[in-house]
Amino acid sequence: RSIARLFEWRGHKAADHMNELLDGVTAILNEASQFKKLFSESELKIIRSDKEFTEQINRKLIVTTDEIYLQLIGDNALGIRQPTLGELPNTFLYRMSLALMLNYLRWEESGGLHPKLKPEKVRNDIVDLKIATYATYFNGVLSNDKRLVALYEKLNFVVAVLIHNISSSSVR
Image (tube, rainbow, N blue to C red; front, side):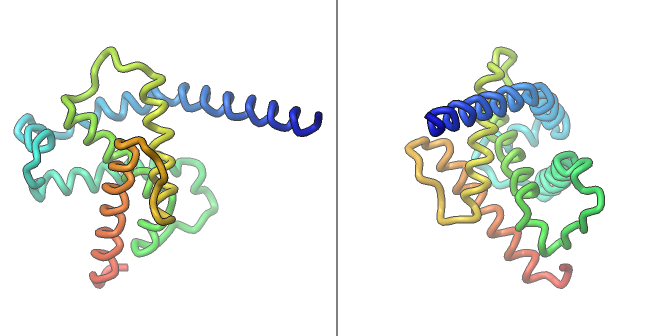
């Protein structure tokens, strides 16, 4: 009986958490709509294609990822030592910021945000982003969800490149 109540309590907590995520969808959609405004039409065409990104696009992506990171840490940063540049790619929130950026790119590659995009769909994308982010600390993600696996692979690659570039530079 007590185990059944524990599972019931955990089920309620999980449902509450999913509802909280749904409440945050509006902010994420607003951020994603701002993302598109950062780029010229020619840059958006490059993003939507398989062409290599220009240095300017890369710079915009890095700056925007940093801004997302700062928004995510928000008040959580009070009294906590900020990570060094060398530590930053190893923090969960920075990796989550990268995952959000990759998701914005994916949305843009598929033609941008659609006005009829359901909040539940975005919420599920956010759950996938968290799973992919956690998976970067381990040996991957076990899933048949091809989009989740592709997101993890891309995120893991970006994190590895960042760590390599930071460790091979003189700035740490």
